Image 1: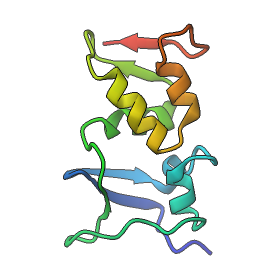
Image 2: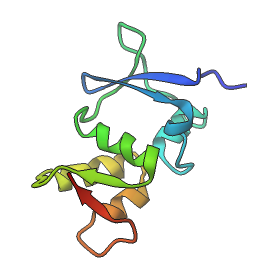
Image 3: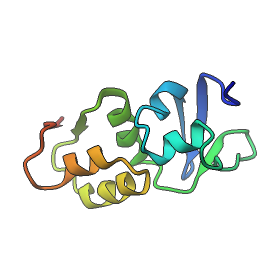
Length: 112
């Protein structure tokens, strides 16, 4: 039985997120999946009981969106693609990294 509830509260670099356990474990090769299925030690908790991840909290929204939909929508004139690639690499999200690289991708990137 999992030690985690179906809803996980996160503090990523000071930005709070709530996600389902299913979303966080969507990619079996990702660091998030390894944390929240017990294969790797999960990050510690902050003073409010949220799992604390010392990474870019603003860019994490795109990580979660990708895990939810297996697609990515970036704002028009998005200037942090390289930083988002670095975050995706940290989390072990190879499919997201491949999608964000400037080459032609099988998954379309839309701009909103």
